[in-house]
Length: 491
Image 1 (cartoon, one colour):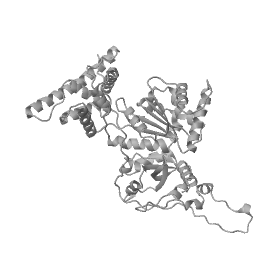
Image 2 (cartoon, rainbow, N blue to C red; image 1 turned 180 degrees about the horizontal axis):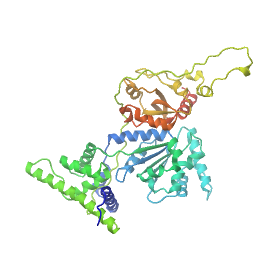
Image 3 (cartoon, rainbow, N blue to C red; image 1 turned 45 degrees about the vertical axis):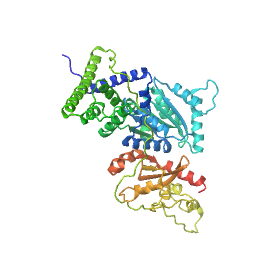
Image 4 (spheres, rainbow, N blue to C red; image 1 turned 180 degrees about the vertical axis):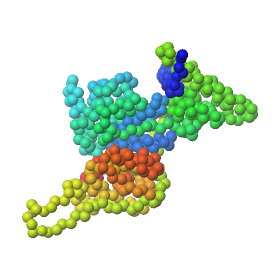
């Protein structure tokens, strides 16, 4: 007796139909309508926050950042937005994979696209050392080497090992290439193996790309249809059905909307109520038919092991490319307690005993202190609300600890608005650094003994702070940034 397929296969059938849809888009001729869609822009608020988080990570951390999402979720569009937001002179290598990629192939691509001097037929080890040296040279210039890999599921095991462990292994801890992988969920499973346990513990950040919510899906479809000349409104039942079938993925929304257009399924909200109701009913039937078609296709594929039949659609739409999203907006919390300085009080006492018998202070305190003449050049508080800056407190933290970054902003007023009237129970540290030659204001909370404890503490933060997607940062790295800024900037 034939057993029914599980419900998850419905998603597989949508994925197969979407792959066919993309192949048809690749084969279609460029038209005025497709050019019009290429200029289509849409901004989703949730993805805007995630884009800002990625911008922070790419500049301030040497973490391996993995962006995961299913097919059709708009990963490539998200990466395009991220790359457009980078400074013009940034040192970036962008690899868009379309077939299996090995470690030697990745190294050759990096060497060809980077300003490194290599002899002909250079060995893999020699090439890796040259890339590491470039990362260290850029660090001295307060720049980073950024490697972005789209469709990273095509990396073989050696290629993934190269980007995750081998490239940064022999480099200085503060001069590693910054690597961003964008892939489907299969790479998550590979990273979760014991082989990458140390990576996950010390320098790994996983960002799951948010699907559109129902409101965003509706607005996305309205704006997109207007680009192709469909200006009348869509019935709420249409928008709901399309959102549910597509699961908030913009690629699936494009495909399903295209099918409905070709079948005459979109209704105009003006007109007689009876005609409106009849047209809406027709749309529901059409969309249910689409679902049944995909479900039956999955059964045929399972039983006969044949390639999926092409979806009968007209080549009308092309995946839109959106522009960079807005920066983080401050959120409302309750008043924050005043920071308590953690500066250790050093008391010097004269003693007639020989110098060899004088008790030395603990090593961590001695490392944390910084010469007082430099302190005089540091800003002590923000301009308007006089929120205290926390350079001294950060420098007195144990260098092997971690803190959570909850905010990064270009304007001091954004930092002030975020802090005023907040109720944050964890220690709070506000500092001002530089990013791309411009001021950059950061807010950190908490002092944790390890990266794992810092990550675990995120769930104990207020919900509003959790929504900021805080991430663990090594205290040593922040201390080095503070010393580099105030020891070399001449402020």
